[in-house]
Amino acid sequence: MPTREPLIERVMADGRGVLGVIGFMDFDRLCAFDPGLGERLLLTIVDRLTRMLPEERLIAHVDRASVAIWFGPDVVEEAAQTELDVLRYALGDVVIDGDREILPEIRVRQARMPADGVNAQAMLSRTLASLTVQPGAVVAVASPVLDLAALASERYALEQDLRQAIARGELEMRYQPLIDAGEGRVSGAESLIRWFHPTLGQVSPSRFVPVMEAMGLAHEIGMWTLNAAAREARSWQAQGLDALRVAVNVSGHQLDRDDMAALVARTLARHSLGAAALEIELTESVAMSDGTRATQLFDALRAAGVRIAIDDFGTGYSSFSTLRTLAFDKIKIDREFVTNVDTLRDSQAICQSIVALGRGLGIRVLAEGVERRAEYEWLLRHGCTHFQGYYFSPPLKGTEFVAFARDSAGLAKLLAIDPYAMRDRITERLTA
Image (cartoon, rainbow, N blue to C red; front, side, top):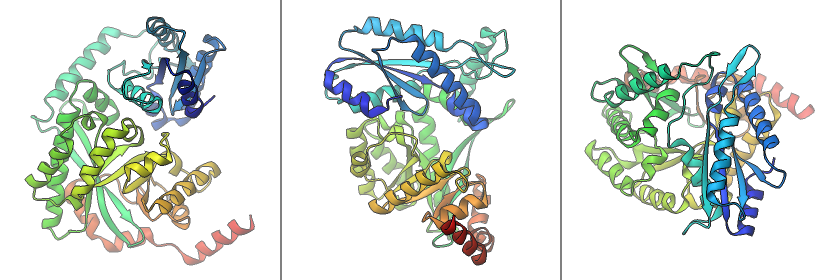
């Protein structure tokens, strides 16, 4: 399929018209436990879509699980919305995969070009970002008879419980170590929110985060997360671990606030924490959704001394000029390319390119999702020295993280590479 660039060229050439975006919202959840299933479903949905549309429609693959349709200047918004609604209904029909019946969650959005003060690239990014705003059916695998009433009741109960989760003390933070292999130390941790429900047990973030964003709780819970992480980082300093940095994820909804930089500054002051101890992480799609606003926020944060990292790098469509303009301090290679990188040539090419890009721009590159020693060794041999993943450690409680950070001997064993084995692997690579 055409990608983002041909679509943008057509939109700019026409100058006006209606853009539609269709998102397969189950893709990441399915890929988390069965990547093959996620790919098969995506291909099935795209096949359905292409067979339903007339040949003159331009369809482009614009994100991992999203496609865009350019209706052009001759289709009015009402007609485009009607067509999108029909497509959503048809694409959401049951997909049979082996002995499973799966109901895909499909969302659609549309935007009009020209939009005041927004170019075609920004319009597309905003439309893609809007796919996460409203809740949909959180159902991946369905039984032959779907009890919609029961699903609605379950969703409502989850929303009500999430509203009270902070007050009830059900939210906790975990800290996954960030490893600097070049210096042989723990450089910090990514803070990860966990919800421990009194009756449901631990609720997966993939389940409650979309609900949180749909309910408008992203800012409230996001500020709770920022405060908890800052408090923890201050405790590390009190225990003599002064060089550690805590990374906090920020959602697109938080970026929409004009006072975000001031809120971060007040949080740091409240916990007597220096700005150098904080790193803000954003996904690639969120960071690129509004270039002007993001640039202003990043400039304000970096001027104060806060670091900025771009998460899941390689899965979005950021341009080199935007990457240079926003001036990130760190880019994180998405786990999709890290998994089995020691055996997959396409992943190897992507990882090597990202490492070279980071080196050229003077930006640190971290590989996330490192779960096997072979992945770590391959990445280290090819210039990546910053890591995160279960090979080193799962997310830990605060006290457990402190113990891990102090265990230099244990980390040294994880980082050590047999020089003879390294020589043999290099020889094999050169003679292959």
